[in-house]
Image 1 (cartoon, rainbow, N blue to C red):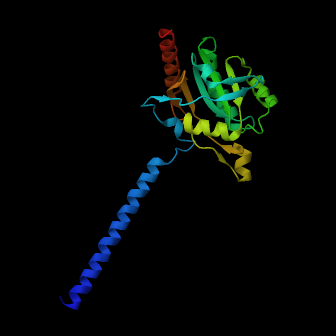
Image 2: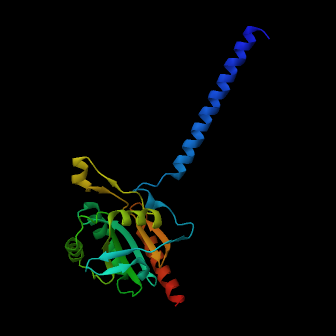
Image 3: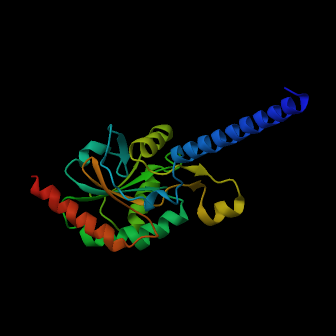
Length: 222
């Protein structure tokens, strides 16, 4: 074999190896993107196409100071929402969306709303009570709950499948949107089973229909 052919083969080999490395890079990147957690803005848009069941329980403190467990909702159709008392975006969502759902279903004994604090260190009991008072809701069927931050963050993200929580650092963004970026979507659970997800980009009537169906199913199983 001539030196020219040897050099040609070397260049061809290097090119093949380079292409292989690039292809593997794209493949691994696609795998990482598939595994990445959905952002707070997107998680509510996902359809519930598979049964999502709570894998474990969580004990929390609600606005009247009483300790309760998520498993206490086993006979309820309940809306779950992340929030914190100082969040201006939560206030807008709760006033414009959750209160409307609450008005439609608050007289159904199986219906419950549960707002889980993403900032439990700052959300004191008196802050939770203040939010309840501002919304003029009944604490018996609308809970504002908290527990240790690491515990509730882990539960919301890895058990309830809410989006990630991120601390904002830009003063302008904090002033407009609050300290914490979090999932503003809503989840509907029938006992320990998720039956629907919703966010601002979807028709609220679809969520109402899901709640109505879930309550009927719950009653039929009694």
